[in-house]
Image (cartoon, rainbow, N blue to C red; front, side, top):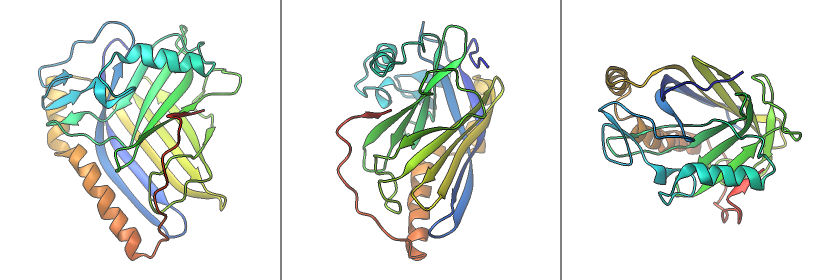
Length: 257
């Protein structure tokens, strides 16, 4: 199903994180996030949301893609072509946390890559860790057929995220995406079965000044809170005596397919 719409979208929803092994640990957190169209002309944004300048909410090109502030569309088009996914030649949307009062930490952002009919052909999951490192998982069907809402796609884990899981096993992705609501799920399997379930979901609305103010006051200091909660839950896992894994060197390649 096509999910492209004519303007940027604001989503209010939640992040779910449920660890199943070696100790059970779970939490839910209310969040808001943006979905912006990367291809084509730059979209107008309301007064309290800016691109590449400080505001209540902001989107900075340098937080994404090559992370040097250069145009994002040529970068993602080139990456898709190098990995045999030039069929994703339509709209490209980036779903991400915004900067809030200048600060952001994005555990994962999603680039939704469609063909010219509006079908979703590939998703780039851009993952960040708290050490300032980044890695991309590019997922698509082997034959590049459209990705349906119930489809599972997998990628080998090669990037260190949590010190309480090894860099081994695989991720399984599922993208349920509709014009007014999304629910993206990532499961982690480390050889003992499903050890971690994470998801981000939300309901869409137009990006307006009123909607941004409502989201801001509903989830104050949200992006700073993401970082604080990561360390809080890490402490709880340490107290539960969950095994600790030292951080290895990051992978040589910045994208895994």
